[in-house]
Length: 435
Image (tube, rainbow, N blue to C red; front, side, top):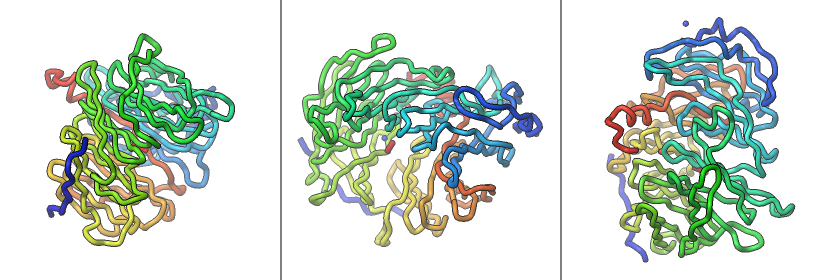
C-alpha cells in the first residue's frame, strides 16, 4: 500500500566441494584458519553461485564461520581473527569481507573464495588475504567500485586520522590504491568519488568534525585542493550517489554536488526537515544509481531529494509503536528494508516509496544483525537465541527455510559475485557504486 509522506520545502548512502573443504590447514601470518586448502577449486557457470555468509560467533567474536549458500551448509572449521571484530563489511566487488578491529588498530581481510574467471566462476576455500593497519579504523564507505576506509586516529597521543582508498584489486594483497594522513584526529568519514575523496576535518581540539575537504588523487596519495565553503557542525553520517554526496550535521544536512571537477554545496536546516529540537539526521543509506538518499534521525526516516534540496518523511510505522532496529538497501537499490524492534520486516519500493511487503513477526525481537544480498536478493537475519539465520526472499516478501547453525550468530556479511558491476560491464559499458 502507498504510505503517507510528509513533503518538506526547499532550503538555501557437490557446489563447493565439501570433500576439499575437509582438508585442513594451519595458521598464517594474518590469523588462523581451519577451513581447508585454498588450492582446491570448483568451477561454475558465470553468476550462478548464491554466495557465502561470513558469520561472527556471538559467544566468541574472534571466530568466523562460513555458510555456503549453494551447498546449504556450514563449511567445516572456522577462521580465527586476531581480535574480536567491531564490524564486518563487504568489499565493493563483493569478493572480500573486512573484519574491522577498531580497538586494535587493524582490519583483517577475508577472501570469500568466489570470483569470476573468464566465462566461469572459480570457487576456493575462504582464507585470509592479509591485514590493513592504522589508528582506530571505523567508517567504511562504498561507492561504485571503490571504498574509503577512515581511521579516526588518536588525539590523546597526537596520532592523526588517515584514509585509504580500496578496491577489490588492491584487497587481493590487503593493500590500498592510495592513502593519506590528515592533520587532525577525529571520528570522521571519507566519500570516494573517482579521483576525488571528500573527507571530514576538525579544526577544534575535540568533538566531531565540521568541515568537508576535497582531496585529489595523485598516484598512491592525495593532495588537498579545496574546502567546501559551507560548514557542517558535529558532522556524522555520509552517503553518495552519481552526482551528490550528503553529510549529517547537528543543525541539518549538507548536500554537495559534483559537476566534473567543480563542487558546490547547499545546507538544509533541521527546521526545514521538520525535526524538533534535539533531533538530527546522523546516518544514511545510499547507492550510486539511486537519485535519492535515505536519512535516519533516530526512528524517523527521510527520503532526501538532493537535486531539489528538500526531503519527505516516510511513514514507515503506519501508527505502530515500534522503533527502528536495522535498515539496508538491496544490492540494486530497488528496495529499502527496515527491521523494527518488534521483529517485523518492512520492505519498500524505492521507485515510489510504497510498501512492497510486510513480514510480521519475522524474527524474535532482540539484538538482530541483518544483511541484504544476493541475486535474487534475500534478507538474512541472525537469531542468536535460536542458533539459526532467518532467510526472507526480498522480491516475494516470503520467509524461506532457515539456515541451521551450531553456534549463536552475531554480525553478518555476504561474500559472492558482484552481478551489478558484471551487468554494467556487459551492457555496452554505459556507466563508467553506511554507519
